[in-house]
Image 1 (cartoon, chains in turn cyan, blue):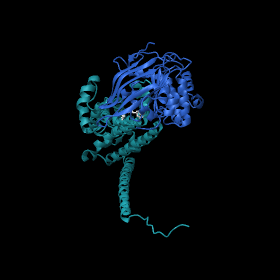
Image 2 (image 1 turned 90 degrees about the vertical axis):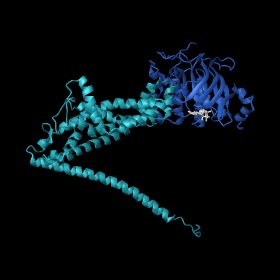
Image 3 (image 1 turned 180 degrees about the vertical axis):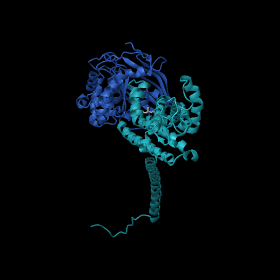
Image 4 (image 1 turned 90 degrees about the horizontal axis):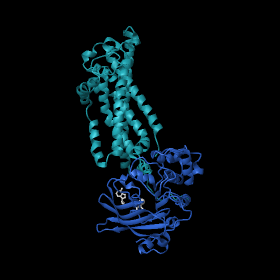
Length: 313
Length: 288
Ligand SMILES: Nc1ncnc2c1ncn2[C@@H]1O[C@H](COP(=O)(O)OP(=O)(O)OP(=O)(O)O)[C@@H](O)[C@H]1O
Ligand SMILES: [Mg+2]
């Protein structure tokens, strides 16, 4: 028979229970607040973007055809999306072409080749590079990359050009790419390296055939993070690629051209410029929504890719 | 036998360097010495891990390194193929002569050393790749040209694993059981046709059946290879090895623990009539 005679109290200290409940509420409200802010941002973007589409449909002769026009000149009601999307892609491709080899090279060096002492010095230096304000890098590209490098190679390079912007953005994201992928390589167990060296593999083979594939999911994540950062980078492209309000579609990256972020920045600077038309100001939100969707797709895609490349070890 | 350990183009032939496989087990007195170690001292930064150790390793024999935890068995073993190079602050003094060449000499490339002296670790550490890729890794990085399929089959057969994995060569090595993984690591080590195989507690993560299989495998392999094995299992040392080296720890005035080889002889001798009381206590399970 069950003994119920003893008076046993297992209900716990009510003060402690209350405290735990409060802490739980505190964290929950922080989480909810963050989610609400994100939703509010997206909703306001969507609202203004729809208003933009409605107003060009109503007020401009071509209607929605203005989205495929001769160049991006919002104050002249020409909103050619191909122009700014292509320029954004061009800058991002150039940036990745710079940041992928340099960032991954630095990561492999730091993780596999550098002696502990060298690594202790170099890693923080690289992280300081990550802290350089992008506006500084923008002027560096404008004053140095364009006149001293690009003009020496291609003398037709324009003062404002997509190439210098891409290189500047590439330099900007090197620390991000290298530090995230270096962490991924460091996380590869020592066992696997020893197995490889024990079989007579050189450092090169160990890095490329053992460490790199084992860290691939982290490396892919690093590259996609870098790419989203490149697509969203504003200051460098606004300064270097074309501070002018609009541009025609430029296939040659040595010419200047407006990117998505550049377009938004120049629309937002100075209200008198924006005064050109209601649609011009609203186009800012429409482009913002497009940018948001692009990075969202990238992030979802990266999640998939990372899972696909994940190697158990 | 002439051996080059400088870096440079090297033909890793399957037929070379497997040694003269004598059908009868080499007797401890006659087997030629392939490692001649004199005055070995190993430091990890200022920590003196192993002191003044002299040791000979004989061809086609199994030499067991035994002793209490932390006495430097792994440290000594890792001097045989310069694995200690990978550890920051590790320093080796003394001579490690391999076929008369000092492995720590100036013209010796650690990569060449490790191609001849393979290693099996305590924890099975297959690459997160297919079974097949694991076996061909070593020969491929050595630039070996030959029939890889045959090499895979032969290596797996010699490691007594072929029948169990012949249908899953393209499956991940991580899907094998622990004992299978360890035999895969042995197969991977012998796929490069080494001269010596070093094993650091190869059975410590395995059950008795897998242990038994690996022990019989070691006995077969010693016909072709020379094996040095670290083990905590006294029965295992007694069962498989021809010679046994017993390491012990000296505790210094400030409590620093330095390992030292204290007894080295034919295994029968060490286990039946050890010359030191310390050895006897250790192998019979009575610790100082
Ligand atoms: N990488 C290292 N850095 C610093 N000290 C080390 C390192 N590896 C080993 N040691 C020290 O060297 C001594 C010998 O270690 P070792 O691993 O050779 O012992 P062991 O005899 O193999 O022990 P076990 O039987 O527990 O594996 C120990 O005191 C250990 O703490
Ligand atoms: Mg050990």
